Amino acid sequence: MIYWKDAARVPAATRLQPASWPHEERAVFYQSRAYELRDRVSEREKLLITSGYDWIVTGDMDKERETYQLWSTEYPRDYLPLQLLGETFWMYLGQPEKAVGLLNQAWQLEPKQPNSPRSLAYCYLALNPNAGSAETAGPRSGGDVRRLVSACRSLRGRCDARRQSDVGG
Image (cartoon, rainbow, N blue to C red; front, top):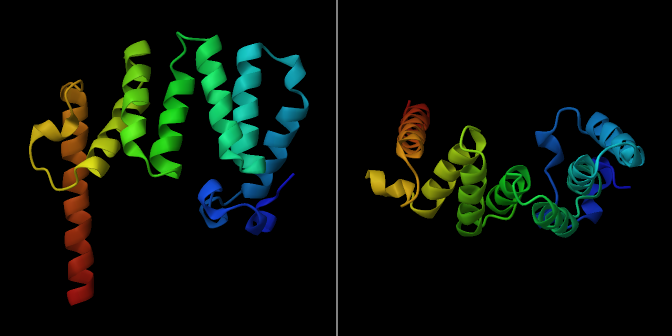
């Protein structure tokens, strides 16, 4: 078991940054405990616990992705493994182009959940950061994602302006 204070043994591309987790030791403890007790839960919950263990405790993103793929195969109407796999590609592997298809599938499976449209907006911005039109949001996305892209762009503009005024003044 790898604790984040020993995270130097895990390649940088496959681990979380410990400074971003204020309670990382507690997260490792509870995720490890859930992993030890996983035989007491449903098969779907086992997959969720295993993927979390691979992400938080071991930092093994290859195993984490394999678990998400197995989960989406065994539970094809469950949006969550597609959502989590898409977020892994987007946030941790820097591959928003791979994330877009997964996030769209997740959104189609569960249209009322807010995570896929939000993540799609960030992916579309990553893929086309300078575009100024609604087409940035991609062909499948509806008005919700377009509004999110617009809000993200506006927020980024305000942050850039603030940063420039802080540097200049």
